[in-house]
Length: 113
Image (cartoon, rainbow, N blue to C red):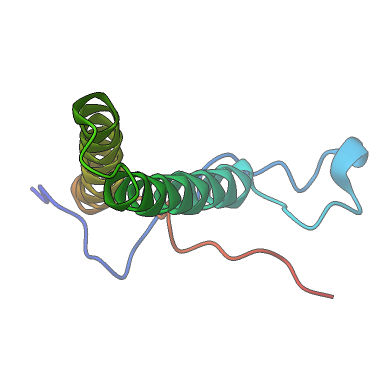
């Protein structure tokens, strides 16, 4: 009895290539499309968290010792770091799902002409 699949034998999710509505669509499977959405969302969330961390650091530096502004800036940096940890954790969870179920989620790429 085979309990785990080989890493090389990854399954594709939802073949929709035979449907007439998607004949000219670059994604013939729904899996790579959803994978690209997940990748784009994680990149966007990571960039927003990084920019908020930088913005909070600049706000902390320019607070000039004002206790209220310093706390606001510190809270902003803390929330940005929490968001960054959530994005990195979600990447780890997705990789764990890929390994456990033998599916290919994050290996899809955006189509190029």
